[in-house]
Length: 117
Image 1 (cartoon, rainbow, N blue to C red):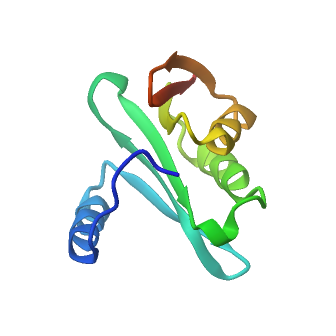
Image 2: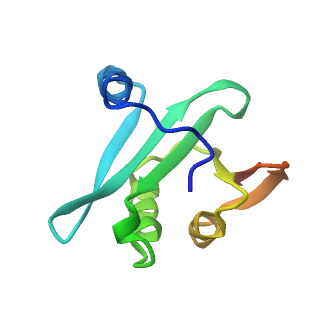
């Protein structure tokens, strides 16, 4: 339910290779019952400074995995404020952020911005 278009496999792999080489980025796999369920990442970008984002495979939705993963990640990543962008058509992701202490900062036509101080 991302607001960003998907990449082909080669482009995706090049993108992640760059992420994993960048020491300023914190990236973690989300593991659920010994399976990779998704990823979570924190990076610095533009106007909103430190951002956090996550992706969970569809087969893992509705189990509280994103909420738990973000909670654990926030105990590791201490920088604040943290910002998150969420597609407005993804209320479940908005709820994950709210459960982890994020508050709505700005609501656009397609994307909402949340902040955690």
